[in-house]
Image (cartoon, rainbow, N blue to C red):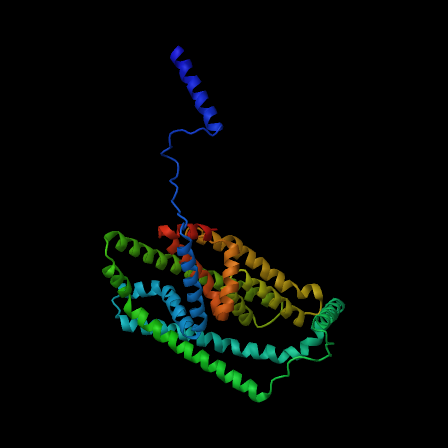
Length: 385
């Protein structure tokens, strides 16, 4: 009995010690803490920051060349499941690459052809719908004019000069508009050809880059780490892009059905718009709400019914973006939403709309690499959601 009582007293003392934060023997069942060293040498951190700034400046200066290459690598990850399937079917590499690229370009051309007619009809109806839009939004006229007058007055005080009405840049002439359109189309065609060429050789190369990287690494541990890292990037990013594409297609179908039920018209056009905008997290759906609200205001006579398409689109986005997609992707990786928004803004400034679409995959690749390199583990932990 004395021994039992003594054991009880020891248990009580141990419990009290744990509550008071006293040190005790480590528990084997507790999760092991991953060491995340921070750079102690300021010179090393300063040189790393300079290298990062130089790299970003180079990416901005060479965006017309680098962007199609990055897009080709991302499309290669999307097409990776189809490549594996064709390999199991004993299809030659060149033939499978040509087939996949033809299917991809055919889908793009078909989608563009199907959307050209509805988009042109809406552009033709836009001047007729402007009076209806002004009638719906007439309650905003006074606040907008007040803000406009205040900004003009503030600008006059800052510059010391009055701001005459109608001042600003002169409208572009017809010749300058056609020159700008020609330059933009030429850049688009050149980037598309570069992307197709790089994608074709990436599909043919297969795992050549991985094998060459493993061969040049000196130690076995480095070889294993490189293989694990690259395979993890390929699997996670491919699963992310395929999952997002499937969910975006579902969002597009649901949006097309909603727009048809609301009587807006051209459901294929609005489904495609929702499908494309959903590739840009957070900012894309916000822009979609504005677009669908304007479409409703242009077609509906009643103000509250005009907002119904935007409200239903928001409901679809909340179900998909806040419930289904996070549940499907949570096992792969989670990212800090604040850093996701900052990444979207930054890469949109760097590379435009395609940069915003590629922002999340590039951020996810950065996190996967940092998680598997000990000296960058702190950065990976900071990126985690």
